[in-house]
Length: 237
Length: 222
Image 1 (tube, one colour):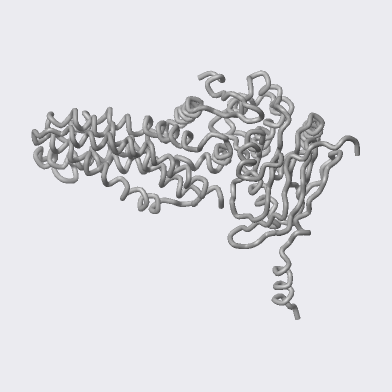
Image 2 (image 1 turned 180 degrees about the vertical axis):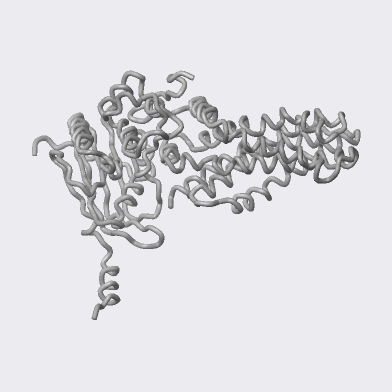
């Protein structure tokens, strides 16, 4: 990546980076700390690989549990990586500078959430056929699992940004972040697993996917607003 | 006094609170284009809170703040367009190099290299900031002030921390250039600054009275 990719146009004395500039710099930073991205994914895959050892290798039992287990692991992986979403920027003062920009903080949060999803949710969705194979998920569910994870994890990244923003000024958010974010994750979990279950059982599942898409649209519009407000409160202290 | 330059920032009867405690009240001052003010006061007197109030990061205040005769919040929006604020946390991303950090603040490669040279970071432009020392990171943040820019308002919170003698001298020289070109400067510092035409605001003069009398009554040593 060249220097011009990082650069933002100057207006008056202030640099006002557009959404593309915000996105590019977040991508660059994400690429530079690959370990942070790989860890939740590895955790996710490892737990699912351990699952047959724990509950026994009966194919029917695993197939029954597969949609729920994959979705719960997706939730945990997203939440694990979410804690540090704004932390670095808060500690080095970048968040303060972003809050001073004439443009709304909304776009900065949206850019960060998008990069977070590309780093965690998207690889998860892409890996899902492999995970489904490991857990003996019936083949009818593969496509639905991929699409539901694709849509659902994007919502999770956006919703989680609210919790990350609320707890950014705390030294150890740990459990608090989970308590704030988990209840908000519930609708995504219900419709995500519901869609996969319907696909396995041979029913139409487009309604569940449509609801997941609607949840994503609502999250994209509202969650960055809420997170931006939470960041301003966190900075105020 | 030669020709009178216009007032850019004006503060009238300002009182600030932090965590429910009133820090100071009745604060009045005005800052001209080309003018510089050093805010003084003991630790905890509210210097940082004052600066953060002026940039609109906290809303716990009473009184009036005007930017070019526009009261906040309208004036705040206008002010932010010509504001360079460097707080305790410099806004330098550890995952980027000094060059990339300056590019993020709108510098071209040539101007960024020149600015880094002036803050004595030549040769470090390609290292990640997370691998630089605290003083060097401070210099990266301050290098923003060495970028070419139109006259604007600088609000600096303790810019001299972690700087060595030559660093302080270079910064003082750049501040003088900034004032000469019509920019304004508001800073906090415990160290004396060698800057022509520097005015002072001492927050100790605006302390809330009751906190004094309370302390007088409570702390009696036998």
